[in-house]
Image (cartoon, rainbow, N blue to C red; front, side, top):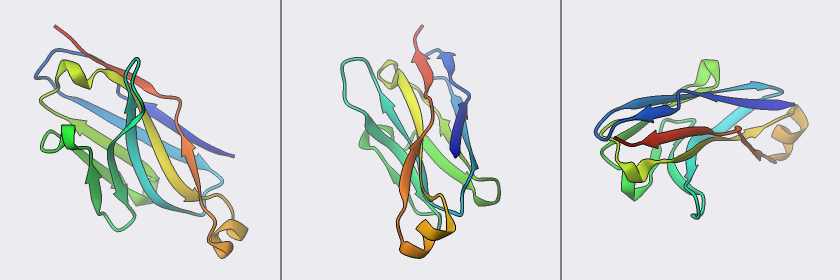
Length: 125
């Protein structure tokens, strides 16, 4: 059983900052990538940022230069520092991890995606 638990969401004024954290626990052999997606009402879920085990990162175009993703491999955690927040950043933010949940899966090269429950971020004055 794998669990991803997010924290750090909330209400912030435009131009403000928030830091999201996500901790993965349970049956985990190895984690490839961790990251964040978001979904606003009436819109599709979109990539915010991801970070691979080697530290390489990807960002959605709308957050480049404002958001920073980081990771602690020893603690199976991922963080998202969000600066210069805009009202259009309002969404439910979901943590995602691509990982191997067992030694057998790792040996077979079969990984799976796991999701957190989501945390609300609201940017409003």
